[in-house]
Image (tube, rainbow, N blue to C red; front, side):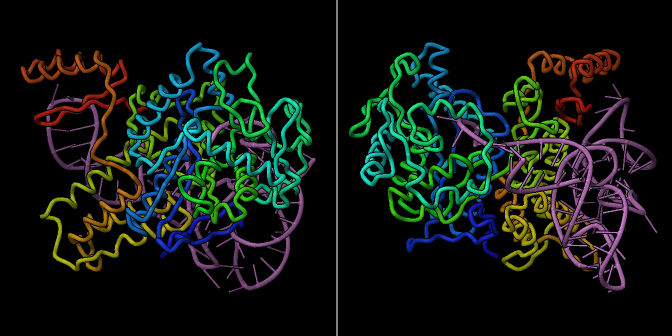
Length: 466
RNA sequence: GGCGCGGUAGCCAAGUGGUAAGGCCGAGCUCUGCAAAAGCUCUAUGCGCCGGUUCAAUUCCGGCCCGCGCCUCCA
C-alpha cells in the first residue's frame, strides 16, 4: 500500500509518488529559526517529518529520497537577538544551529540531505525577486523595499482559502507603511540602521540594500536544491498562512509552474491543554525535559502518541507513559532477538504489515503503535493459531522501530552527580550487607526524587514516578 | 466576527452503521534482604447533551453545550 498523506491544498488523502523520471521523491520541510532553542512543539513537526522521511526511504529506497530542511538565520527575530545580545548575527545563529542539531540527534532524527541557510542563498533570493519585479508581480516601495503584489496572482489564497475568510482588522498590519495593499508582503526589506545593525546585502536591481523577507528564502532554496516543482512541501499548520500561501505565490509567478504537488501540515502541540508560552510556565525545550530526568527518546515517543494532524496535548505524565512503553518495547525486542524464541519460517514477514498500513494511512502513528503492541502480545504468547516469530519477523520488528525512529536501546538519562554518588555509596553498603545504611541511603534518594533499581550484579537509576 | 479542529475509561489515545485498538496508571498474583524491575491476569453495557434517520449509531443528519487553534512574519 502506497503512502497516503493528507494534502492541505486539495484537502484529501493523496498517494505519495515521485513525479520525475529519475524516481527521486523530493520534499522540503520548513525548518527552525535559529535565534533561541527550539521547543518541543517545534520538534513535533520535525519528528513527524522524520518519520515521513523514513517511510519514504523504506518505500522508494534510501537513495530515492531527497529531503531538504532550511535554517532561517536572518529575519526579524534573529536580528532582534543580535541587538539584544550585541553580538554578530553569525555567532548567534551558529550557537542555536548547533543546539538544534544536538537536539535533533538526541531525538534520533535523520539529518536532511541538505540544510540550506537563508544567508547562504541571498543571491538566489535576489534573482527571484528581480524576476518577479520584471514580470510585474512585485514592486519597489518608497523606502527601497520590495513587495509582492497579491493582486497579480489570481491563485492567491488557494491554500488558506483566504478569500473565504473575513480578516479581523488589527493594528499589526498598519506597519504596512509603504505597501500598495495591506495584504502585500515583503520580498525584500530595506536596511534600517537603527534596527538592523550591520546585517545587510546589496538588494535587487532598483531596490535598496537590505535583507530578504522571510517567505522568499524557502522559495529560492527549494528551487535551487530541488527544482521548480517539488513532490511535497511540509511544515507546521501555523505556516499554512501566510508563509506557505506566499511561497506558492512567489514561486509560481517566478517559475510559471506548479510549486509543490502536495502540501502537508502537522498540527500544534498543546501543553496542559493550551498553547505553550513562557508566561504560562508550560514552555519546554528538550533540555528542560532532560534535566527533569526524561530521556529524549521518551520525548520522541510522546510526540508520536497523537495523530500528527490533530492537536496533541502534552503533559509531563505523557513522558512517564512514554518511558514505560519504551521499556516494554525494548523487552519485546530483546525476547525476539533471542534465537531460542524464534522458529524457521519464510524469508519475508507480513505480520507487521498492519503497522505499516497504519503508518501509510496518513501517518497514523497512534494506531501504528497500537498495532505494534498487539503484535507483541501475539508474538510473545503464541496461541495454537498464531505462529511463533521467525527470523523475518525479528527483522520486521527492527524495520518498524526504525520507521518510528525509536531507538529502544539507548535510554540514556541525565543523572545529577550528587545522585550518582549516593547510589554508589548505597551499592557499596549493600554489597557489605550493611542493610541499615543501604536503606537510609535509599530514603535519601527517594527524597531527592530518584529510585534505585537493584539487580543481582548492577543497579539502575530512574526518576521517581509521581 | 471569520476559518478550522476536537469532546471516547483515572490519564493519553485509535477506531467503526452491527455492538469499543493500544499505551500509562491502578488492583491481584508470581518473584524478591528492602524497594523495585520483570512476567501473568483484570479494569468503558459505554464513546459531551438532546432529538432524528435506521432492523441497528459512539460511528450518518439536525440542534445545543464545552474546549482548543488560526486570522500577516509562531513548527
